[in-house]
Image 1 (cartoon, rainbow, N blue to C red):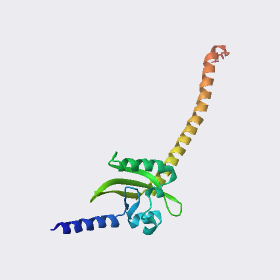
Image 2 (cartoon, helix red, strand yellow; image 1 turned 90 degrees about the horizontal axis):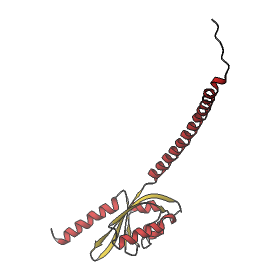
Image 3 (cartoon, rainbow, N blue to C red; image 1 turned 180 degrees about the vertical axis):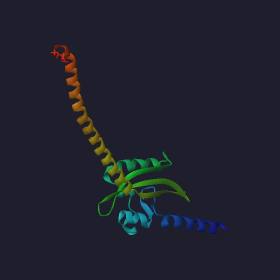
Image 4 (cartoon, one colour; image 1 turned 180 degrees about the horizontal axis):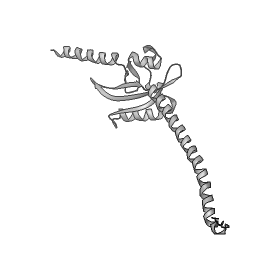
Length: 178
């Protein structure tokens, strides 16, 4: 197999993985501009390829996460870290946002460094986690109330018992008749 044939085969494998993946995929330049993006990620974001290619990845970061996102990208591109994975929010074209897990690496392509990112929509999982937290918080509140409600009568009984012990000899004795 010639070098050209191996290259074409490798390119074909990459395109299959990139475009047929169930995850969102993108390739970015060192200036963080999107060079290539698959249909899955376009659907997640609600944009067309024409609208996204050439824009900076930070454009889609939720404002609460921009600083952390910038920091991770800086560390990745300066080779302080080999890759990163983060749970974050991305903003869709319509202004809504969704939770996703983002994994990024930098790789060499001929003489250029490029970034490869995989995006997995985890909105469903995050919604379940939130529901679970609400249930846990409710359970904690209920347990606190039950403990308080049980403790109050027990404290009253204990106080009465202590009072009776302390004042037992002061109580008149009742003679039993037989």
